Length: 403
Image (cartoon, rainbow, N blue to C red; front, side, top):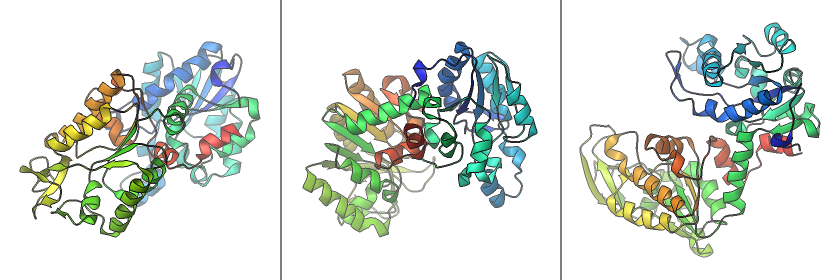
């Protein structure tokens, strides 16, 4: 495996898989975090005297069009990304209106040193998600070297993220700077964590986080559980949770996780209290209660002040911190205090020398919203990929480069 930083791209065309699956509203990009994250890789190749052919997916065109017939493939074009990328790079970005058609082939063939080409949405082609080797081979013709800089899709065995690597010999396939940093951050937490290792796991459903919690039982000293998933644990223990979110088919799972943690000496911290709402809405009436005594007609939408204090103390004592998932419905102002409180504690622990990794779409959105992104050690761009990494799974996009 070649390392990106040591490779000289002079005179070479680099085929770079990026993750430009960004939110676009009315033709305007509303969050360009993922695009900015790819800039160092692109700039290094251009600075060396190479050229760059970029490829990415955007949304799920065929599946979404089936569900919403008013949509067309034109609603999933990457053209707005090309314009925005040109502004960020300060140089022209060519755009091919297909990925393996004549326009893409011609523009890739005539690309000169210092130039950038972005291919149209790979998921216009069903072969991409199927991991079709012939489709991957066609894409591979555009580059002398293959660079995977899309950690957010590393858990998918798609044509452009894993299968394509088979067309490049060992010294000509590598991670980009973003991918290198993502893998290093994840491995730092999973394999080289200083104790106490505090994992903060939030979100709505226990079922989404079972595997990550089970794997962390082998690594962490403390696991904090917040968000809607906490109420399944309380009901499993016989508590009254009112109208709070609960997965009744996961009550036994919750009990088993608590027992496994106890057997392994891992401390699971559940929130002592909640901020309640009489409906799931920004203008709901609010109250508070101990989490085993939530009245009927009320639901927990955020951790309470007692839980904030308890969780903050645990976080601030940590030397390694993983945060995946919010503590409540932080998108609504009335229910954002808990998530903001955790963000503050993670930032303080980091300032005192802890290594902190924040990953998962909602957690990342939270640290960005509250202005803590530059106060933690690393903010991951990978949602599902990071989750699967911490579940202990081998990610196809990483394995394809390493073999």
